[in-house]
Length: 140
Image 1 (cartoon, rainbow, N blue to C red):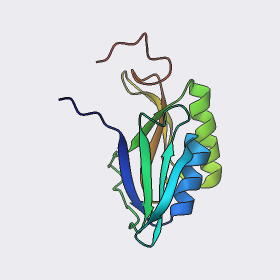
Image 2 (image 1 turned 90 degrees about the horizontal axis):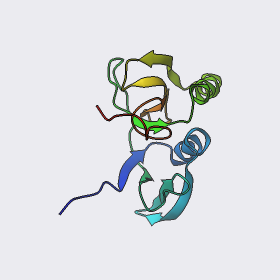
Image 3 (image 1 turned 90 degrees about the vertical axis):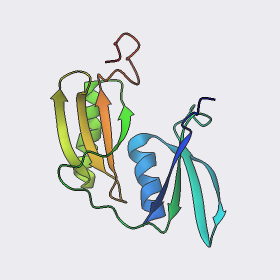
Image 4 (image 1 turned 135 degrees about the vertical axis):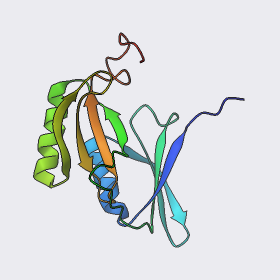
């Protein structure tokens, strides 16, 4: 038996704000929603990956406050450094940029970080051995 990671479930303080964030910055969309324990439960996925990996988002969570040196995050790969810069510019305008674009040695690559409305950190990267364009890169 080999388990396969299929989803992450998050309780969030403001469901609609998190839906809006993951739609705007991550390109995710709602693929399922249902009533659940007096509220709404939402499944979100990247287009084309609905059967591979999803976020399950539910209200009722407390806002997360991560320490300045806490790098816990969700990671999304982009197709170019310019796309990382674009996300960072949009996040700066929205007031949710936490890590300005920066370059780190391989395998980290070029990345920026955002804070979602629940307090989770979300990284957008280019040049890691995962995601778009990584087929030719070795896994460390």
